[in-house]
Length: 447
Length: 72
Picture 1 (cartoon, each protein chain N blue to C red):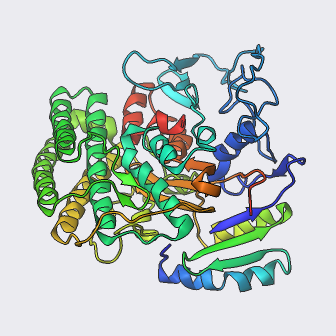
Picture 2 (cartoon, each protein chain N blue to C red; picture 1 turned 180 degrees about the vertical axis):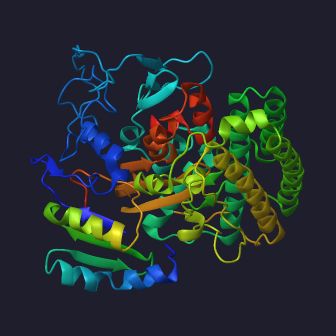
């Protein structure tokens, strides 16, 4: 479904839809900053992507924006802070970030606490916003592909696939069946690795050293396997508009698939151990809960949404590539919406990914893995169910296949919007654990 | 784009339903190859159309795309 609204740019006020559809809230705020469009009736506009130092009235996504010009730095008074704060005896505001001592990317959270309880969580991102969509303008499809698969290494293959599908859609290209099947195989391999990494993160957040080590070993095993067979630990350089840059022999697929069974066996053993570790379960059960209604209202996606009972998966509701009736899998979901439900969904989805890889490798179609594709003017939306959830890449191509407009919507951007739901009304010691169960990427937000 | 059957039926009736709700104001074009519907409306009808799709037809919100000067 594609709703088109024409509006003269001289009139910068348009009706907001986020009052009806809360899922649009952050996107309207982003567009207000980047395009200078004012969404009438939106309760909270300004200082979102562009922080307080950014000069007023300069909107970097407008075509009139001159990236070579030096704009004066704005002195902000007062410095950024919440519009309202809790005032009560014992109330305390705890800042977390934006700089972390480990490898975590920049993000700033203000936790308003009363004793140990977090009353409100105010997130702030975009400290390392890269302007990916602007950089893409005027570039060739091949150049933008490099951007698409590099802005977040955790789901590089999913992003390159969504971009390629958008480009292929502009001319209605028919992609060879073997390429479609291998794309599914590789997408599931990426999902498996992502979910094992997320499980590692959850174990680490609860200080379970042995479980963390065991999960880390599995993640590293998958990364090395990927590197050995496909030339890159994070599946870079494989998707190209028209198919894949590399064919995998049937034996290679079977080899990776066999290794997947070994990973699954160890994952099941790990899950069995975690299920009976009461100190672990105490930190996850009934912690960081998100109700189904809230998950729907915020438009949450992926394992986070499915752990709250929202049974949506683009591989099923809008099948693409080789997904469809000929591949049998189920979409795991839980009802509780707590940290433990999210962990169970991750384990179950990892198993389903291995199952899918096995099905594809057992029935790999013969034939080429790429078709010649000459990009032509047009526009199209590409979508994938990335490991984190629904992901969309929209492209408009002009003459000679140059990208005129590129729009990327990531699962982490969407789920960070709803993260505060899980983090509020719980003890602040639970904060890093809840964050780990969401398994989000800040780079996908600061794209 | 492949949609479940029930959605295809709703999708096929989109133009009729939109025409009866917003006579002459919401223009619907269907792309049979991609099973995609393009709805054109004025800013005044945007909230009504979005509410209809989201709450009555059970579509999910994906993304907002702003295009300057290049929209066809």
